Image 1: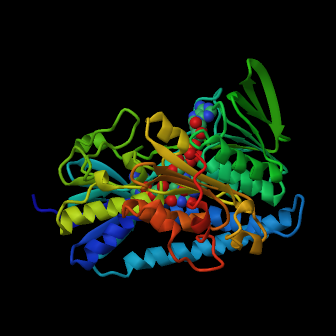
Image 2 (image 1 turned 90 degrees about the vertical axis):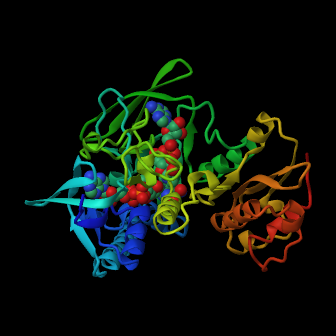
Image 3 (image 1 turned 180 degrees about the vertical axis):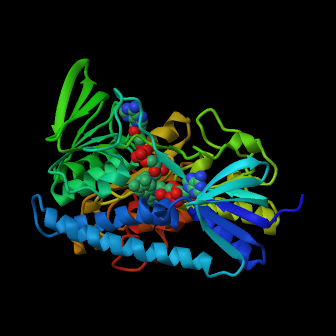
Length: 456
Ligand SMILES: Cc1cc2nc3c(=O)[nH]c(=O)nc-3n(C[C@H](O)[C@H](O)[C@H](O)COP(=O)(O)OP(=O)(O)OC[C@H]3O[C@@H](n4cnc5c(N)ncnc54)[C@H](O)[C@@H]3O)c2cc1C
Ligand SMILES: NC(=O)c1ccc[n+]([C@@H]2O[C@H](COP(=O)([O-])OP(=O)(O)OC[C@H]3O[C@@H](n4cnc5c(N)ncnc54)[C@H](O)[C@@H]3O)[C@@H](O)[C@H]2O)c1
């Protein structure tokens, strides 16, 4: 069948927009369809990574104390300026290309590789040789006594656009929950986190988690674990969260509540069945390791395919599909090694690979190097910038000396972790990392010292 276009990308996410640009520059006729004019550039730059990290930066560099809505409003204005500039740039980067048609509208499948697009009053139908689904994910709001986002009950998007609350209850202690708790506490809100797990940051070793909890405690964040939320009520004055902890029914009141219980793939309204595109049992679009869906010529990139929900993973998804179309077709999700992550608390916690607990659970023979940042003599950088809190921990294979994992919690850890991840991918031994020349004063040079002492 002859199609109007070579490729249609649904959703302006990281992977899709990058792929659209690459294909257009390679001479293909491409359309990109984005549901909202406020979302050109996708979640990351509009409501995710960029705005939250801009607010976090302003929160953690605040010199004043206490509850200060005026300071928050100024930070919000800076964020809005930044995201508006990035949104405009993202739009023009594709719209300026002759072979790209940028459409603001909502796409629905009406058959194999064929879409109906509702763009305001206009409806159009378009087909393409390849279709890329890059629609992202939406906040998951579980059935907590019929709770709905609205009023004093927020998700990560609405809370970023609400007045600074004097008190905040965060339901969920994952990425969003922890980052928002830290950020709002730095802005002066009184913050309580309710997490159903037996302990906070359960994927981290206890010594690492304790350090993060200590930093949260420094700004007054209280984390209540084993807390199972039952229902949330609100009225004009406040919201009340009812939860069960240690078999007791408890209640906490706050000016605002943040629901941060994960994000679910955004497939509503796509009518995937019309194109033979199947979902997994958890509601993600089913893909193979080359990100091919169950329908020929249709790929799914980013959060919607159920992979790790990070912007840089969506970007890597784009590399896999670009390689399938323009390259050798050898790239796949199976060849990803040592994918790092960072929770942007203050200071941030960055991780790659296995924790000590996970390595021991696998029965691996390991050696562990661990040091609190304040005790690392050859790491003046955190002291220079005035925040010597944190911990550095390496888990190393006792036989090969290869790094199996690392948890870095300190200023700049979001940068240093990328070096450690690269070392893991390139099979650099811990001894080689220890003996590397690093700039001074930097946070990276801590590796010279930490990797010189294995305590167990
Ligand atoms: C508060 C927050 C903070 C985060 N911080 C970080 C961070 O620091 N680092 C990090 O790596 N990740 C972070 N993430 C996760 C990251 O934002 C996502 O993993 C990433 O943006 C996913 O990108 P994507 O390519 O899947 O698509 P998205 O960027 O989500 O784009 C999907 C787009 O599709 C559009 N769309 C949906 N349905 C349709 C349709 N039917 N028709 C047309 N368009 C449609 C949407 O409007 C949206 O613009 C954060 C997320 C949140 C919520
Ligand atoms: N810095 C970053 O890279 C960054 C920042 C924010 C978000 N993100 C991405 O966005 C995703 C979504 O973030 P998130 O924090 O919403 O999800 P998350 O998966 O990180 O955390 C959700 C938390 O809620 C808990 N939970 C789930 N259902 C529950 C229930 N019914 N009752 C009580 N607890 C429950 C989970 O155990 C988990 O601890 C993250 O997984 C991450 O991939 C990344």
